[in-house]
Length: 118
Image 1: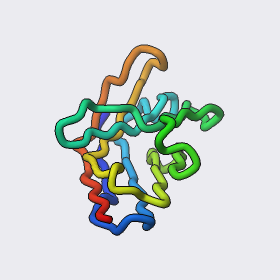
Image 2: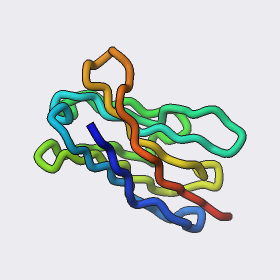
Image 3: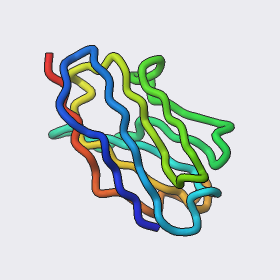
């Protein structure tokens, strides 16, 4: 499964961005999809994830109420809508796919950079 992220960029604090991750392959529709991020000098952290049918989502505390993860299985795409961005959201954002939910993320995108300035 190949994953390609897009939508990153440089914005001012308080602005919004929407990240997209397009998948190719046959496992997307049944997979849990996630967004991770890695800021300079920090460990990678899971930002959000969504189950195969969108029935369950998870958000790390720092983004709750500001970010929304969604997916379109027909388009094999997962999205991350990021509102009210803060400088601490600056990071490279990666999407990931868990083809056997609970088995660990086994496909990763190349990352898209998000820079938020104050």
